[in-house]
Image 1: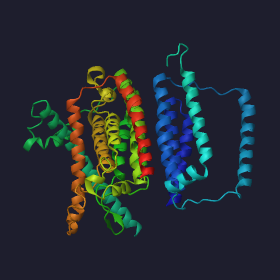
Image 2: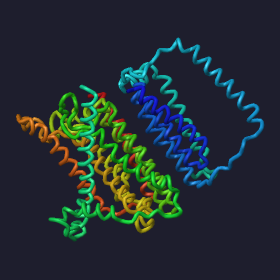
Image 3: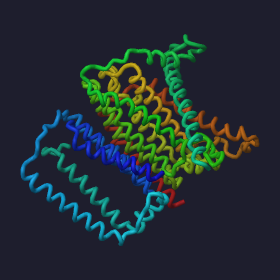
Image 4: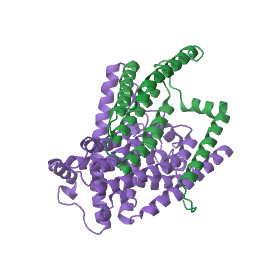
Length: 167
Length: 347
């Protein structure tokens, strides 16, 4: 049961990702990205991370992608121009991508033994367990991250302000 | 329990809930037309059937038989997809709502399609996806009124979703759980005195929720996305026949869902307002049906209030709407969280 669902939504995620690159209209690409993010949420759910799955949908598929589509709608961009890329990108890009992929694969394969394992049919991690880890064991990193995000928000507001001091 | 039995029972539950929900949607429209009529000193629909009770059937038939016009300038795939997104999100959220006492039959919950640990979060996530239906419908219609209406609607929904989410945190803090069943259980002890709106001290959160919910569902006094005098019909200007009906059903479905959520989170869900004053009934059928009665009665009162407000208050101006959401509701919701957590840690 879990495996069937995993296969269905993994295919959805991959198809959405490929479609994102192939579509010529920006709004179609944005919608494909929503499909990818929602499918990822289902994959999280299959791994037992229910809170993470819902946060993925609320924050990414809901809030962030709405802003994306909003911008696309407001700019009203037409179709993208199809180019075949520069020659540098072709000669350097493909080997670079292959090397990067190999490095990632090697690192993950080597480190794989040190981490715990999880399988699709494992139990669900409840929100209580998650918040115990976040707010007790990892309190300092968590608070530091929130301060970092706050600073980022302040920076964004400062950048968006006009020179005469009016927001 | 065997798999086939689970599947069959779930299907039966889904069908029953869907039929009741859609009927409720149709009759909410009638209730609104009747009530607004009385508020404006006229009768409202009264010709079809006794007291106009068959009006929703006729309305449905009329919309079904209307010509389905697709304007030539629209972006077809998204134009056709948008009403589907709106309606399916509206129908999806009813799946996690418990309507009655947690009674089981062969290990299956009777009055709820699915009982989840994160029911409340699912409701919020479905709401946040529902924005796409409106945003895409306006953009794909290729019409300035539609686009303006959908931009207004999406901006309004994003802004008020924050206040809506934050107003629920106090309730979650008190229950210590995101499961809707647990949240109701906390309020079940002393009848009306332990409901979140009174005994739980969440009355401010209730009003924040109320106003944010009006804005979320694009209802008066926050119905700027479909302000007729400025935008003809708003985001669904270019839609006709069943596609228009889908937006219409989605709006009223959202109203009912919002009423159900308010009932569960603030008004004690399916529990009776008298608590232990009335001893629990011995008869099993009464035991099952009494909670359903209380639930429906509370949702009805909430819908009545919804329509009453629509018939009474004038529309906001757009800058007032945004200022109200960001500068008033959001800080109040945050103060409510601080106050609730202080009270909970001291008590």
